[in-house]
Length: 90
Image (tube, rainbow, N blue to C red; front, side):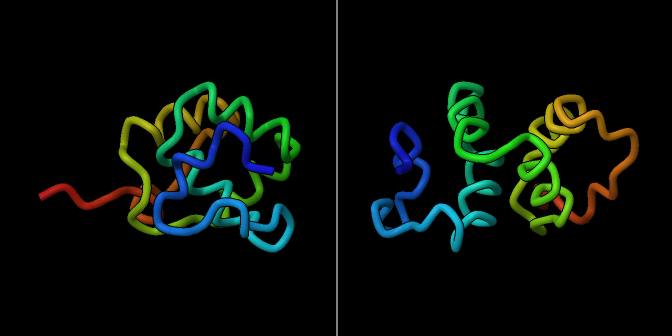
């Protein structure tokens, strides 16, 4: 199921993840920590509109500011509340 993406789920057993039930986890984890190739694989599992919808639901403190900037461009998002997404850097 998560062929090629399993390295992003070091904290759990990737084969136990369900595409439908765990979609938010799979999408946020891949967008936040995956490579461009991983994101391409993600877009084969889910539609771009579905990925964008989950992304816009937010996941506090998981995204690096540079990744957030890339995702804004990728999904054509003009304005976003970065406090809802960005990791705190001390």
